[in-house]
Length: 350
Image (tube, rainbow, N blue to C red):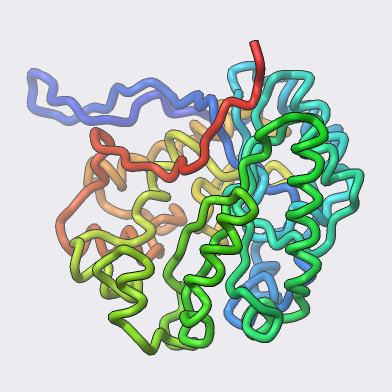
């Protein structure tokens, strides 16, 4: 078992020495990757290029492991299943969805799903067992535009699957899963933002735009139009940072406390951005609280909030978000958690 460090925030003792005394974290919400497989070949995605698998294992979350985690951790009430891969490629997903429903645990896929390959039985299970929310990654309003980034993707099939979900929602008289159309804005698709927004509205979906993470790949062209359509005074992540004084992805640092990221094999990654080095521990071997409160995880939380010196073995040390905060002399403000809980829902009837 991992040795746990039970202290994490600084207080000054009578002698002036600094000690740490925060309790270990025991979150009710976790992120558990259901699949690191993906069938698409998006040009700048490390899953598509294979770079992801140099550190992150390739595979699926097994039903028996999911059941073990749920049964051993009754404090867990919400689980995010999507991250680097496509959750609908996991053959165990229907059983996972049904078991979570039986145990009154909310499931979501708000980091993104491409919905290109999914069986009708799975689509029905999403509705029947009240899957909470799906953020659908659809960067275009036509096949010609969509396939430029979502290579191997079929726009019409995605629309068909969304329509099937809505048909099942009508059949079961349910509003779940909530559906969001996520549109990553590029130069080649910016002209279809308004059309996509209308298509989303027609299907009862909320619509969200997002900055491309690689600004050199198909950068936006009509910046004034993009600012209007996105409702943000920026057209890129760097411009957002320049205008706001904070990193576009800084919210994910809070996940180390509130919504920690785990891989399907039980390894601990801390946040949804980390794909270069796992933390110590494994939730299936050390228990959830044991793995989330290893000395290494506790030190990472200190680095983010208490400005202790970075340590080479902690994955956050090489993260650009952390390095920018440190360069600017800032720490993570845990008293002002903005979060990323759009679409969070409670799909249960009393």
